[in-house]
Image (cartoon, rainbow, N blue to C red; front, side, top):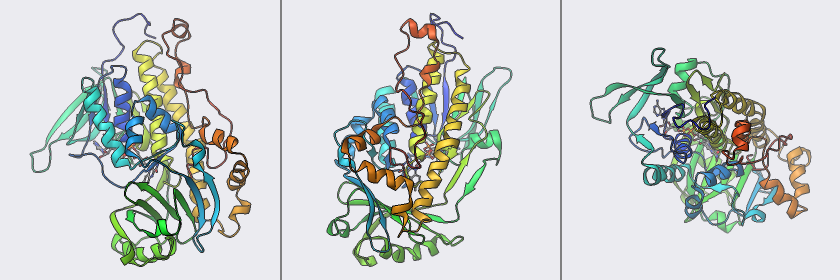
Length: 451
Ligand SMILES: Cc1cc2nc3c(=O)[nH]c(=O)nc-3n(C[C@H](O)[C@H](O)[C@H](O)COP(=O)(O)OP(=O)(O)OC[C@H]3O[C@@H](n4cnc5c(N)ncnc54)[C@H](O)[C@@H]3O)c2cc1C
């Protein structure tokens, strides 16, 4: 282990593949400790696809730590009053959670489209941390490896924008972190096509929608729709009456055109007032296949994986980006501890093991339960048979207990500063862990309502 009194840090630089939420957040957390990074993004711009919109309390705590929270709150809708589960057949609420009990809490869930989250992160990278963060667009990672001679990790990168002649470049650093999403080139360099898990037999259709029927029929917040044919999530997500409607089409193997041709029928079933196409306006649509998968290891030599590059889960419950934030929050603590002489290099192995175990034990299992709850259960009996619904019904009787439940530290969080050197801690070099952990078993959908 490097001595805490050493002036020369044990490494100089980290190379990050991918300027999505995990890559940019990792760069910001490292820049707060003056650790230089270069972030390589394949595209000429930041991602604008419709994906994440809600980030549970554990992610909020990392956003606060990164100094991002005030800007996220300023961009979000001011109130998110409730989350409920509804039966599609008659629109009846099965169970509801009163989110107003945490409306004044700084660490409450964040609700904001991923595109806006990434824009704010990027602005912080440029405006606050330009000295330490170098984000390069049109840099597509092709391959990753380690040079035995120099002992450095490298990325082979294709550089150049549209219409430009492409050139290949090898970039080196002490560590490479793959934050390049579910199609990660870094992961493929390490493990080829090996990515154990499953792909669900459905297509996931995601759109931003304007429809005055939501207000007319008194819908608010987030509405998980329970039905075997028309399951999904309908939620208010932005200013000016912007709602996000997501649903799974259970028929496998159609073309995207065929899925979109079926959309009016799904909308008629799912939305209040059974509207025709002329009654709503769709602003943007994206279609996805959904998976639950995890890589065999988050670390091979000097190459690390985090977030969607390492694991993915279906979106029912908002575990993906939240877990991504917890991965990079943890990895940042490990790299900072090592850089500042408070921990040995072995702390990076601890990161790899702990975050993978948490994904397998909690995130994978719970996200599948969340999907099953909306898509496979009997909507007429689930309110009486589902253990999680029973817990929510009990909590609804006591606002103080509900609030505690919504804010408690989850078992998917982990404080890596507990592995910092005891001597360094005694010398006051460690600023204190971020959270104590509640490692007790949560039920299927934990406190953050990642259902
Ligand atoms: C429909 C949907 C809804 C979702 N809703 C939620 C939600 O509400 N809450 C939640 O927490 N999660 C949600 N998720 C999951 C969440 O969006 C992802 O977990 C999150 O975006 C992962 O972040 P990331 O940075 O790991 O990867 P990405 O967001 O995929 O970012 C990866 C970046 O790397 C770049 N890249 C890719 N390949 C290369 C390469 N070869 N070289 C260089 N750059 C490259 C990409 O262009 C991209 O910018 C949802 C997902 C979907 C599909």
